[in-house]
Length: 345
Image 1 (cartoon, one colour):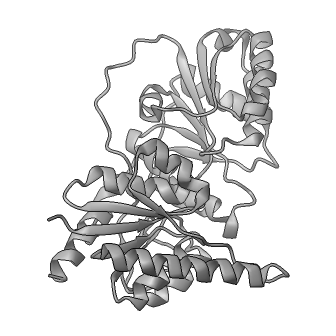
Image 2 (cartoon, rainbow, N blue to C red):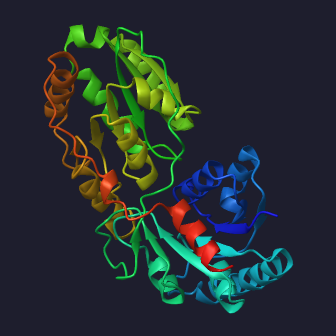
């Protein structure tokens, strides 16, 4: 009988997708998910085995009593689920949705791992790290991490083999996270408009857009006579990474790990309002081993970025030699999971 592992991940795709990657890459264990209603649609689409648990962010205002009540209800729900299914291990992937379930696991004396996706530990994981010494990190120099923490990287989907691209057009891929990036709807058309007439005829633009921006952006690119494909969600993102010449992206840890896997030059736009400025810190860590430019979307020089893109794609401007980061990994999350389960026997 396979050992059971419960993965606690909700709120956003940034917390859920690493958990899904871990489960999909490891068939030796039986994985279940504890989620909130915000990520339930993803779970249904991916056909995950999951349970829904109530939770809430903690805000020190008039909504505090309501938030605490929701967390308590989620704690009770988690206790009942964990008692019924008796998992051998619970892994929290951060975000407020982890609070009730990880506390429930602690009360029931179930082994716990906390995984931190970002270059600075989130406030929830800082709190939950007092419940266990098993802390896994995406980035080696994570701020606020305990000394016992292990640098494991972040679980991502396995890279498939792709045929060499035949398209003579240079491809620019624009991805904005699970919800798209509103700023890209404004900035990217401006950048493309500054390319030379010749460059515009030789590029293919693949851009993730919000549904409300799709028609407006489409009209802009048509006027520029640029070849383009707009999608609200890109199903086979690995295929697009593989054939891209330049990637323009936000700085979620999963996205950066996937760009690293394909070793592509990237223009990075950290989300300015990200909690604890974690996207900028993610980008800084990423830049130590990857060829990229980190941009401040509030102070961007459109003409300068357009020239940089054109040089990289058409003038064969050389990038610096990429360093390998794999040998620094102390473990992987999958190996850490199995190590704890073996020791628990």
